[in-house]
Amino acid sequence: MALNLDIVGRKKEGIPFNYEQDTVILYALGIGAGVEELDFVYEKNLKVFPTFAVIPFMPAFLPMIGEARLNMRAVLHGEQKIILHRPIPPAGTVYNYAVCSAIYDKGDNGAVLHFEVEGRDADGQVLFENQAVVVDRSAGNFGGDRGPKTEKFDPPAGQPPDFEVKYDTSPNQAALYRLSGDKNPLHIDPEFAKLGGFDRPILHGLCTFGFAGRAVLHSICGGDPARFKSLGTRFTGVVFPGDTLITSGWKMEPGRYIVQTRTQDGRVVLGNGLAEIE
Image (cartoon, rainbow, N blue to C red; front, top):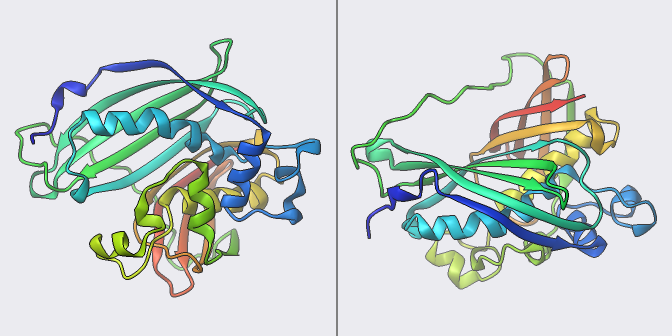
């Protein structure tokens, strides 16, 4: 089945996502938070991790993947970026406005699809934006534009990071995170994981993204979600539940940090990362 190029520019408007305090708390637990981060797991003074923005995003994003007619056996979630306009309320409804903004032809490397989803509150005010890049490795050479080169954010050679945070994931991390909405059996079913070429289920990339966001929030935002403005990364490696995630950041200029996450054995699993804070 051929890639559907007609989805470019076709907007999905006002897709609602309802959530409550327990939704927010479950997400926080899914990205490794616990009682030592009480304001994020207890409704008394509940705060919302900025990376929760990826949860309302998914129900708007996944239908577009279907409409694009991608070969799911050849699809990679390449990049994710969130942009926060203000702190996310602990309960409410987010209305998602989604569009596939571009499809680029990378030849033998496949087709690269760019998606943008804007989350607004009931008054129409923008809460956050999601930008996702998806690669279908089987869909290149369709005669399209190759697209622009991606800006690179590499850690400065020989320079120690300005912050570094180590979090252990649980062997049950994927089983818990999937309850926030991503029920892909790749993350829970050993037999399905083997069909995908893995000897056991892997952790969701957006769960790893959430761990990195926690590290940024607590290291350079003082735990205040209002100071967290954006985080964008590229998914560069596989994480297994039980792995240790080490997130490091290098200050480029005031309010901008290069971010990278690696596992306990040194594999970089989130790269080309940039965080912006106030």
